[in-house]
Amino acid sequence: MCNYPDCSRSGVCRRHGTQKKVVLTNGARHTHSEENEKNDVDTILQVPHYVSDNFRKVGFAKCPNGDLFPVLFLGPNEAPSSIRREWQARLNQHLRQGARMAHLVAFYGRESGIDKFGLVYDAYLYEEYLEKVFRANPER
Image (cartoon, rainbow, N blue to C red; front, side, top):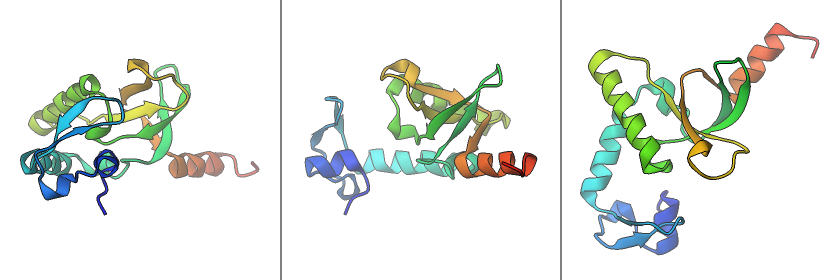
């Protein structure tokens, strides 16, 4: 069974290198091919582990004012193209200059649209955050 949910719903699997057009859940059209899959895998392999290990996990993002927001950590193919391009530019900067890599996230509770997605540097997995809070306040 294919792990790509948009492909499996349409009956076309990226893993088999088909050239058919697939209608995604948002109504957009996308062509899957072996070349696309190879590029996706190459991109994922270049992502630092402290980012890629969090893909599809739940956590919290710390905003500049100190507030924490619940987020879902996303992989590069799980966000709109505009934010994905920005994330890809940050990845390229990381690879060239060693800059810190940003997490691509979906903010839980925000309505759909561009505000729902973002790039954050200060983020914690849910389990890490709980451990940090309980270590600081053991009586909780």
